[in-house]
Image 1 (cartoon, helix red, strand yellow):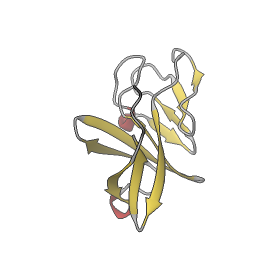
Image 2 (cartoon, helix red, strand yellow; image 1 turned 90 degrees about the vertical axis):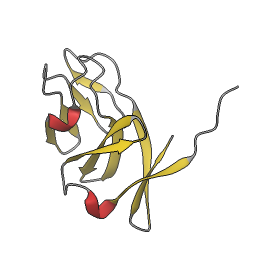
Image 3 (cartoon, helix red, strand yellow; image 1 turned 60 degrees about the vertical axis):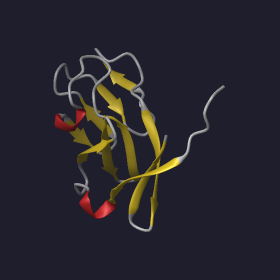
Image 4 (cartoon, one colour; image 1 turned 135 degrees about the vertical axis):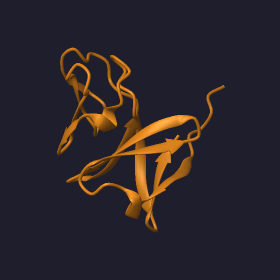
Length: 105
């Protein structure tokens, strides 16, 4: 039986890096939160290719580049856009409720 996803408080928006990537601990998971021109997006912080911390990567608009092998992903949907990344990164829906960023998990 599949469990229904629910909204969980992640972090106050005021604590996030403006127009950059922020590392947030959520239970035992590290989450990368991206402040983009079109809103906030979130993914697991570790690259699914080499395990590097995406929060240490280069971020530009909607693209995060892994600091280890320079594979890049679109943070809006997790789609890999350059090699050696070939699998989508795990992303989470986000919403801002009264200044608190929530993720659906």
